[in-house]
Length: 247
Image (tube, rainbow, N blue to C red; front, side, top):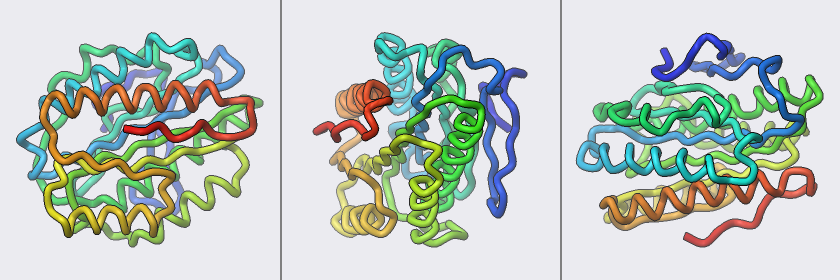
């Protein structure tokens, strides 16, 4: 069950999927267009050494997004994954995302179901985008998958992510979608190669690799994520996605 949800979010099942998602009811949305953003964070056992710094980074992302000129047009979903996916909260209006709530929400342990988690992130984004579109909202999307290692627990193959991204584009519910894979604390060549191959196999827009996961690096990551969200939101209505930012 989501940790930071409230009664204004609906629980939604995804067809042919192991996991569903939750989201703000469309009748509670006051603007005419939205950027739908998702952050998926790996919490497998190997991340235990930097869990608190990652929570601090998520807090900084939320705080920074609140200063965006498009803050009223942002919906944020936050999930964690090890060998299973856990939704911290579904697609919430940014005004309902409180920075203080993210302290202590990540729990590390288990293995890494990277492909399963990513497929859910994409499919949930597409499904909610379709709901928005059918209710005359304009929408685009951006998603971030943050991991420190290789997949070793998924039921789905990497191709399932590629198929989900293809479906997102073909649905035409989203004006554009940006997908960013982020490798953190990547110090092993084989892990680096695995993640780079996953980017190619799945069709991520961008891959960003961080050699460590100290507080300074994760603070920089928070800035990159928040700026990327803001840029994608500002591109809504132009017919194309924002330009990829350099980390």
